[in-house]
Image (tube, rainbow, N blue to C red):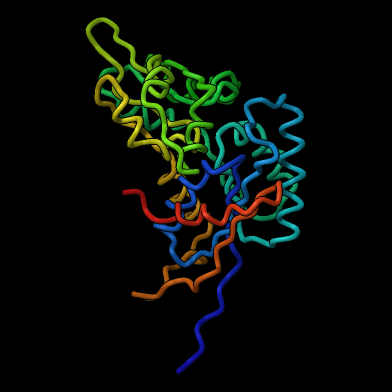
Length: 267
């Protein structure tokens, strides 16, 4: 029997906390042959509290060091708040592909029937020039409501840790997302923080009416596959990655290995 083919270098998936696992699990679903190294910068969480220049310098320096240590084949910034700042300076420092996460405003405008779309993000993301530029370029004729939640990311972190999420608090956080105007109402909510898809079942229950919840993670996984090209060829039918290949690294040094359970496809 021939020896199995050696595994290639991992993809480094980066976020301030556990939220980027919503992206990592879509990468695993689409590209099951790729080892994943997930980095949670829990020492810096939440990124929304950082001044822009300080956050940019912090993320770029941390990621350059991690790439030097881990030798990944690509980096995925699974964080809207960081991506709106660090993509250009990080790409200037690295020779490997860097895939970012930005608010899915273009596809939201394309699928909305009412013309009322909400971008649910962190307070930092909703005030960034990057976000306003996306609206000007891709949704000039769509009524965009920007909602910056201060508590949803922490609620997601708590839910991942096994704590119960207060439905009333959740409903209060998302209430501004639901707008009525001239007989029409919001029909698409962009989940512009990677933490938020991890709360999707609870968000759907707390919503006052049904909407399309737009999770960018599948599109990010497809973009990564496109960037990697033939290097992302699937495993043979029935083959699986060996146990222990995937890793979770916390910038505080904490043991976050329990997050690997989130690589399972969402129910």
